[in-house]
Length: 317
Image (cartoon, rainbow, N blue to C red; front, side):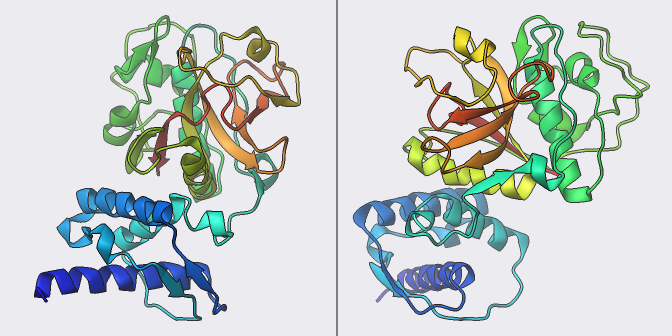
Protein backbone atom coordinates (compact mmCIF):
# COMPACT_ATOMS: atom_id res chain seq x y z
CA UNK A 1 0.00 0.00 0.00
CA UNK A 2 1.25 3.47 -0.82
CA UNK A 3 2.78 4.93 2.34
CA UNK A 4 1.30 8.37 1.77
CA UNK A 5 -2.15 6.91 1.17
CA UNK A 6 -1.83 4.78 4.29
CA UNK A 7 -0.76 7.79 6.34
CA UNK A 8 -3.70 9.82 5.04
CA UNK A 9 -6.15 7.10 5.98
CA UNK A 10 -4.54 6.65 9.36
CA UNK A 11 -4.55 10.38 10.04
CA UNK A 12 -8.19 10.69 9.14
CA UNK A 13 -9.13 7.69 11.27
CA UNK A 14 -7.36 9.25 14.24
CA UNK A 15 -9.16 12.51 13.54
CA UNK A 16 -12.56 10.79 13.54
CA UNK A 17 -11.76 8.97 16.77
CA UNK A 18 -10.51 12.20 18.30
CA UNK A 19 -13.65 14.12 17.43
CA UNK A 20 -15.80 11.28 18.64
CA UNK A 21 -13.87 10.92 21.87
CA UNK A 22 -14.01 14.65 22.52
CA UNK A 23 -17.73 14.93 21.99
CA UNK A 24 -18.86 11.61 23.44
CA UNK A 25 -16.53 11.20 26.40
CA UNK A 26 -17.72 8.50 28.77
CA UNK A 27 -19.71 6.33 26.30
CA UNK A 28 -19.02 3.23 24.24
CA UNK A 29 -21.79 3.49 21.69
CA UNK A 30 -21.26 2.44 18.09
CA UNK A 31 -22.33 4.91 15.41
CA UNK A 32 -22.93 4.15 11.76
CA UNK A 33 -22.21 6.78 9.12
CA UNK A 34 -24.66 7.03 6.24
CA UNK A 35 -23.60 7.88 2.69
CA UNK A 36 -24.79 11.42 3.35
CA UNK A 37 -22.70 11.62 6.54
CA UNK A 38 -19.61 10.44 4.71
CA UNK A 39 -20.18 12.97 1.96
CA UNK A 40 -20.51 15.74 4.54
CA UNK A 41 -17.27 14.67 6.22
CA UNK A 42 -15.53 14.54 2.85
CA UNK A 43 -16.64 18.10 2.06
CA UNK A 44 -15.45 19.21 5.46
CA UNK A 45 -12.08 17.55 4.87
CA UNK A 46 -11.72 19.32 1.53
CA UNK A 47 -12.43 22.63 3.24
CA UNK A 48 -9.96 21.84 6.01
CA UNK A 49 -7.31 20.92 3.44
CA UNK A 50 -7.82 24.24 1.67
CA UNK A 51 -7.32 26.07 4.95
CA UNK A 52 -4.68 23.98 6.73
CA UNK A 53 -2.83 22.03 4.05
CA UNK A 54 -2.95 18.90 1.93
CA UNK A 55 -2.27 16.63 4.91
CA UNK A 56 -6.00 16.86 5.69
CA UNK A 57 -7.11 15.72 2.23
CA UNK A 58 -8.93 12.40 2.22
CA UNK A 59 -10.82 10.22 -0.23
CA UNK A 60 -14.40 9.15 0.38
CA UNK A 61 -13.21 5.54 0.42
CA UNK A 62 -10.96 6.32 3.39
CA UNK A 63 -13.83 7.45 5.58
CA UNK A 64 -14.90 4.64 7.95
CA UNK A 65 -18.51 3.50 7.86
CA UNK A 66 -18.73 3.14 11.64
CA UNK A 67 -16.71 3.73 14.78
CA UNK A 68 -16.90 3.19 18.53
CA UNK A 69 -17.00 5.98 21.06
CA UNK A 70 -14.81 5.46 24.10
CA UNK A 71 -13.62 7.48 27.05
CA UNK A 72 -10.28 8.52 25.51
CA UNK A 73 -8.00 11.25 26.81
CA UNK A 74 -6.21 13.53 24.35
CA UNK A 75 -3.39 16.06 24.75
CA UNK A 76 -3.97 19.78 24.33
CA UNK A 77 -4.74 20.89 20.79
CA UNK A 78 -3.17 23.67 18.80
CA UNK A 79 -5.44 26.34 17.31
CA UNK A 80 -5.53 24.75 13.85
CA UNK A 81 -6.63 21.44 15.31
CA UNK A 82 -9.31 23.12 17.41
CA UNK A 83 -10.63 24.94 14.37
CA UNK A 84 -10.64 21.72 12.38
CA UNK A 85 -12.70 19.99 15.06
CA UNK A 86 -15.13 22.92 15.07
CA UNK A 87 -15.43 22.76 11.29
CA UNK A 88 -16.27 19.06 11.42
CA UNK A 89 -18.61 19.19 14.40
CA UNK A 90 -20.45 22.17 12.95
CA UNK A 91 -21.36 20.39 9.73
CA UNK A 92 -24.24 18.65 11.43
CA UNK A 93 -23.50 14.97 11.00
CA UNK A 94 -22.55 14.65 14.65
CA UNK A 95 -25.36 16.88 15.90
CA UNK A 96 -27.92 14.86 13.94
CA UNK A 97 -27.14 11.95 16.27
CA UNK A 98 -27.49 14.02 19.40
CA UNK A 99 -23.75 14.18 19.93
CA UNK A 100 -23.20 17.92 19.94
CA UNK A 101 -23.45 19.25 23.46
CA UNK A 102 -24.96 22.58 22.48
CA UNK A 103 -28.21 23.22 24.34
CA UNK A 104 -31.50 23.12 22.47
CA UNK A 105 -31.96 26.77 23.44
CA UNK A 106 -29.42 29.53 23.91
CA UNK A 107 -30.12 33.22 24.43
CA UNK A 108 -27.21 35.58 25.05
CA UNK A 109 -29.62 38.03 26.68
CA UNK A 110 -29.89 35.53 29.53
CA UNK A 111 -26.14 34.98 29.69
CA UNK A 112 -24.77 38.53 29.85
CA UNK A 113 -23.64 38.52 26.24
CA UNK A 114 -25.51 41.39 24.58
CA UNK A 115 -25.12 45.17 24.32
CA UNK A 116 -27.90 47.77 24.06
CA UNK A 117 -30.11 47.86 20.97
CA UNK A 118 -29.47 50.77 18.61
CA UNK A 119 -31.66 52.81 16.29
CA UNK A 120 -30.54 53.41 12.72
CA UNK A 121 -31.39 56.75 11.13
CA UNK A 122 -30.60 55.87 7.53
CA UNK A 123 -29.89 52.87 5.29
CA UNK A 124 -26.96 51.94 7.51
CA UNK A 125 -28.22 48.66 8.97
CA UNK A 126 -25.04 47.02 7.65
CA UNK A 127 -22.94 49.18 9.96
CA UNK A 128 -25.18 48.54 12.97
CA UNK A 129 -25.30 44.79 12.40
CA UNK A 130 -21.54 44.49 11.90
CA UNK A 131 -20.55 46.82 14.74
CA UNK A 132 -22.92 45.23 17.25
CA UNK A 133 -21.74 41.75 16.31
CA UNK A 134 -18.21 42.97 17.07
CA UNK A 135 -19.47 44.30 20.43
CA UNK A 136 -21.03 40.97 21.32
CA UNK A 137 -17.77 39.14 20.53
CA UNK A 138 -15.89 41.46 22.88
CA UNK A 139 -18.44 41.04 25.66
CA UNK A 140 -18.43 37.25 25.46
CA UNK A 141 -14.64 36.95 25.36
CA UNK A 142 -13.56 39.80 27.65
CA UNK A 143 -16.63 39.81 29.93
CA UNK A 144 -16.96 43.56 29.56
CA UNK A 145 -19.35 45.82 27.71
CA UNK A 146 -17.75 48.03 25.09
CA UNK A 147 -19.78 50.42 22.95
CA UNK A 148 -18.18 50.65 19.52
CA UNK A 149 -18.70 53.50 17.08
CA UNK A 150 -21.17 52.74 14.31
CA UNK A 151 -20.20 56.10 12.82
CA UNK A 152 -16.58 54.99 12.54
CA UNK A 153 -17.79 51.96 10.59
CA UNK A 154 -19.86 54.17 8.27
CA UNK A 155 -17.35 56.95 7.69
CA UNK A 156 -14.04 55.09 7.69
CA UNK A 157 -14.46 51.44 6.70
CA UNK A 158 -15.11 51.95 3.00
CA UNK A 159 -17.53 49.02 3.25
CA UNK A 160 -20.63 51.07 2.43
CA UNK A 161 -22.45 54.34 2.92
CA UNK A 162 -25.13 55.63 5.24
CA UNK A 163 -27.59 56.00 2.36
CA UNK A 164 -26.89 52.96 0.20
CA UNK A 165 -25.92 50.08 2.45
CA UNK A 166 -22.76 48.01 2.69
CA UNK A 167 -21.18 44.66 3.53
CA UNK A 168 -19.83 42.74 6.54
CA UNK A 169 -16.85 45.10 7.17
CA UNK A 170 -14.32 42.27 7.55
CA UNK A 171 -11.18 43.97 6.21
CA UNK A 172 -11.58 47.18 8.22
CA UNK A 173 -12.31 45.47 11.53
CA UNK A 174 -9.27 43.20 11.10
CA UNK A 175 -6.74 45.76 9.83
CA UNK A 176 -7.93 48.93 11.62
CA UNK A 177 -10.42 47.90 14.29
CA UNK A 178 -13.21 50.14 15.52
CA UNK A 179 -13.30 53.28 17.65
CA UNK A 180 -15.39 53.76 20.76
CA UNK A 181 -18.82 55.30 20.39
CA UNK A 182 -17.98 57.90 23.02
CA UNK A 183 -15.09 59.10 20.83
CA UNK A 184 -17.01 59.00 17.55
CA UNK A 185 -20.75 59.63 18.14
CA UNK A 186 -23.34 58.45 15.63
CA UNK A 187 -24.80 60.94 13.12
CA UNK A 188 -26.17 58.55 10.53
CA UNK A 189 -24.54 60.58 7.76
CA UNK A 190 -21.62 60.05 5.39
CA UNK A 191 -19.33 62.30 7.37
CA UNK A 192 -15.68 62.59 6.44
CA UNK A 193 -13.52 60.02 8.23
CA UNK A 194 -11.64 61.29 11.25
CA UNK A 195 -8.00 60.33 10.88
CA UNK A 196 -7.18 61.21 14.47
CA UNK A 197 -9.42 58.56 15.97
CA UNK A 198 -7.99 55.84 18.23
CA UNK A 199 -9.07 52.24 17.72
CA UNK A 200 -8.17 49.78 20.48
CA UNK A 201 -10.27 46.79 19.45
CA UNK A 202 -9.57 44.65 16.37
CA UNK A 203 -10.89 41.35 15.05
CA UNK A 204 -8.34 38.58 14.65
CA UNK A 205 -10.20 36.99 11.75
CA UNK A 206 -13.53 36.89 9.93
CA UNK A 207 -15.07 34.33 7.62
CA UNK A 208 -17.99 34.69 5.24
CA UNK A 209 -20.04 31.50 4.88
CA UNK A 210 -23.25 30.96 2.96
CA UNK A 211 -25.97 28.45 2.28
CA UNK A 212 -24.87 26.52 -0.79
CA UNK A 213 -21.19 26.33 0.19
CA UNK A 214 -19.70 22.84 -0.01
CA UNK A 215 -20.01 22.38 3.75
CA UNK A 216 -23.59 23.70 3.83
CA UNK A 217 -25.55 22.22 0.92
CA UNK A 218 -28.92 22.76 2.62
CA UNK A 219 -30.35 24.84 5.45
CA UNK A 220 -30.41 21.90 7.82
CA UNK A 221 -26.63 21.65 7.59
CA UNK A 222 -25.96 25.35 8.23
CA UNK A 223 -28.13 25.66 11.38
CA UNK A 224 -25.72 23.81 13.75
CA UNK A 225 -22.76 25.69 12.27
CA UNK A 226 -24.37 29.03 13.09
CA UNK A 227 -25.32 27.80 16.55
CA UNK A 228 -21.75 26.72 17.27
CA UNK A 229 -20.39 30.09 16.16
CA UNK A 230 -22.97 32.05 18.14
CA UNK A 231 -22.25 29.96 21.22
CA UNK A 232 -18.49 30.42 20.95
CA UNK A 233 -18.23 33.99 19.64
CA UNK A 234 -21.40 35.70 20.86
CA UNK A 235 -23.10 36.46 17.56
CA UNK A 236 -23.06 35.94 13.80
CA UNK A 237 -23.88 38.80 11.44
CA UNK A 238 -26.38 37.85 8.73
CA UNK A 239 -28.29 39.36 5.83
CA UNK A 240 -32.07 39.03 5.68
CA UNK A 241 -35.22 40.02 3.81
CA UNK A 242 -37.09 42.86 5.53
CA UNK A 243 -39.38 44.23 2.83
CA UNK A 244 -42.30 42.10 3.97
CA UNK A 245 -44.75 44.24 5.94
CA UNK A 246 -44.90 41.53 8.57
CA UNK A 247 -41.21 41.96 9.34
CA UNK A 248 -41.35 45.70 9.81
CA UNK A 249 -44.54 45.38 11.87
CA UNK A 250 -43.26 42.46 13.95
CA UNK A 251 -44.26 42.88 17.59
CA UNK A 252 -43.53 39.46 19.10
CA UNK A 253 -43.90 35.71 18.71
CA UNK A 254 -42.20 33.77 15.95
CA UNK A 255 -41.84 35.44 12.57
CA UNK A 256 -42.69 32.85 9.93
CA UNK A 257 -42.62 33.97 6.30
CA UNK A 258 -40.91 31.25 4.21
CA UNK A 259 -38.05 32.52 2.06
CA UNK A 260 -38.49 32.57 -1.69
CA UNK A 261 -35.74 32.26 -4.29
CA UNK A 262 -36.73 35.56 -5.87
CA UNK A 263 -36.49 37.50 -2.61
CA UNK A 264 -33.49 39.81 -2.31
CA UNK A 265 -31.81 40.44 1.01
CA UNK A 266 -32.02 44.09 1.96
CA UNK A 267 -31.16 44.25 5.65
CA UNK A 268 -28.40 43.14 8.05
CA UNK A 269 -28.95 41.96 11.62
CA UNK A 270 -27.11 39.66 14.03
CA UNK A 271 -28.02 36.23 15.32
CA UNK A 272 -27.43 35.93 19.06
CA UNK A 273 -29.43 32.89 20.08
CA UNK A 274 -31.69 30.05 19.03
CA UNK A 275 -34.46 27.76 20.26
CA UNK A 276 -34.79 24.40 18.50
CA UNK A 277 -38.18 23.81 20.14
CA UNK A 278 -39.82 27.17 19.42
CA UNK A 279 -42.39 26.61 16.66
CA UNK A 280 -40.17 24.09 14.94
CA UNK A 281 -36.97 26.01 15.61
CA UNK A 282 -36.05 29.69 15.46
CA UNK A 283 -33.07 32.02 15.54
CA UNK A 284 -32.99 35.02 17.87
CA UNK A 285 -31.93 38.17 16.03
CA UNK A 286 -31.00 41.62 17.29
CA UNK A 287 -32.18 44.44 15.03
CA UNK A 288 -31.38 48.15 14.77
CA UNK A 289 -34.95 49.49 14.71
CA UNK A 290 -34.81 50.61 18.39
CA UNK A 291 -36.28 48.86 21.42
CA UNK A 292 -39.77 49.80 20.24
CA UNK A 293 -39.59 47.17 17.51
CA UNK A 294 -40.27 43.50 18.17
CA UNK A 295 -39.46 42.16 21.61
CA UNK A 296 -37.37 45.03 22.90
CA UNK A 297 -35.45 45.24 19.64
CA UNK A 298 -35.14 41.46 19.19
CA UNK A 299 -37.10 38.91 17.18
CA UNK A 300 -37.54 35.16 16.89
CA UNK A 301 -37.23 34.13 13.23
CA UNK A 302 -38.36 30.64 12.29
CA UNK A 303 -35.64 28.56 10.66
CA UNK A 304 -35.75 29.27 6.92
CA UNK A 305 -37.73 32.51 7.19
CA UNK A 306 -36.60 35.91 5.87
CA UNK A 307 -33.38 34.25 4.63
CA UNK A 308 -31.88 34.69 8.09
CA UNK A 309 -28.84 32.41 8.16
CA UNK A 310 -28.48 32.20 4.38
CA UNK A 311 -25.65 34.74 4.00
CA UNK A 312 -23.42 35.19 7.04
CA UNK A 313 -20.11 36.20 8.49
CA UNK A 314 -18.35 34.83 11.56
CA UNK A 315 -16.17 37.24 13.51
CA UNK A 316 -13.28 36.14 15.72
CA UNK A 317 -12.02 38.48 18.38
